[in-house]
Image: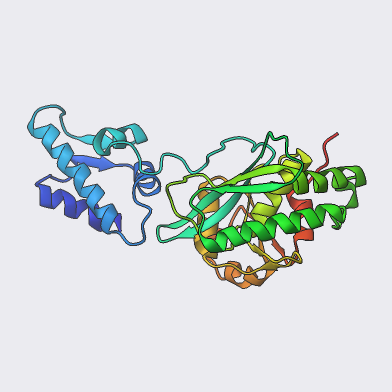
Length: 294
């Protein structure tokens, strides 16, 4: 691809061979930070812009050939600030109440954080406020997640590892979710969001807040959840897995129903990833909260 795009842009701008070199690292940064769309049209436009600006600098004697573009700062000088400056809103551990999900849009896959907080209130009845430009289906998904999280906690979080949560913790979490004034937000509020695939992510974020426990590092998840805790299939598995790898995720939770979608991916996409396929939320909980704090 680059063997065609770069020489063609150089030819169109009158550059001679070897007067401009764009390193592989810079090209990867160009794709990740400026040109995530499917196809190469936008990438071609950015390469042409880089070449034209380099020619302009040469003509005005601002630089002498050969020019080499190696780092992100070189791209910023020529193209301005990145469209996607970072993949992760939280570079280190996420605090209690925050969980990384995976989304699928027309631009490809991306990480999608779910943030939950408790609002100080004198009321003794629970409520749930939603922000982040959520569509109708996603709002319904939040309601399902809230109801199931309360039920799951009231049943003492039934899962394979009973040592992850004590009866007192489970009872406290259930009461917290039922009586607290909660606020659930999905960042990048100007971007409309919809769909049910963040269901297990929302349940995990609510339980994380109620238990005052963060989830494990570098974990992302996707999957619709039902009122009984069943984890249902979602779309965009390839795009979501690529987004997870791009963001430094090494552990993914996804529906068992999507196992074939994952198995069909190329090996280089699947490499260095620990993937858990789940059918019920009781399988999600011990993975997300892998160890109980002392």
